[in-house]
Amino acid sequence: MDRLPHEKGFHVSWDQLHRDARALAWRLQGHGPEDGGWRAVVAITRGGMAPAMIVARELDIRTVDTISVKSYDHQSQSAPRILKSPDAALVGDGTGVLIVDDLVDTGRTLEVVRAAMPRAHVATIYAKPQGRAQVDTFVTEVSQDTWIFFPWDMALQYVEPYRGRD
Image (cartoon, rainbow, N blue to C red; front, side, top):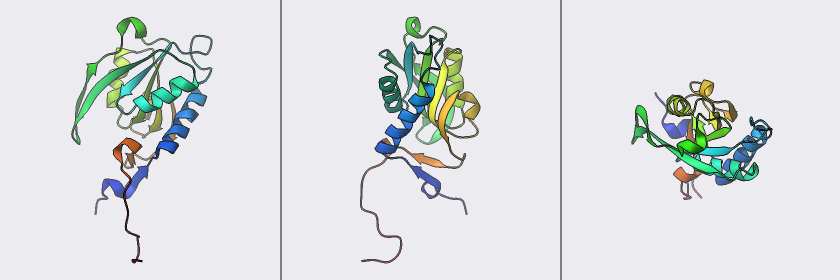
């Protein structure tokens, strides 16, 4: 029997996301091409926005922009396409630019982003094996069949005990 997504789920709280985004910033500290610094952060919407904000804060990067790529219709994947690009004068070919996302899964979204900014440094918090080659820096690798539940995907609610009742 195939597992449902929640059966091999990795639940990420806001606290955990914050800690992991800070860990990502620490890995990136001093590794930018401009005397160790970065010119700008480009967040991949929507999942990359919270991590990008934390990374920008930790590394004191004041210039932040976004790139929007659509590769899903509900839960079915389609060919990724850019819906909104960052300021071309700001990012150029990506030199000195840090691209941040929450997760790389298959790598298809990052292929499109890398084509638009080939010299940028791509950083994600989580990486799955299939897309790992598209990422320069990441914090945690998870298996390809793990479903990550981000805090913006969840709500607090009562859960029945696993065994028995009160």
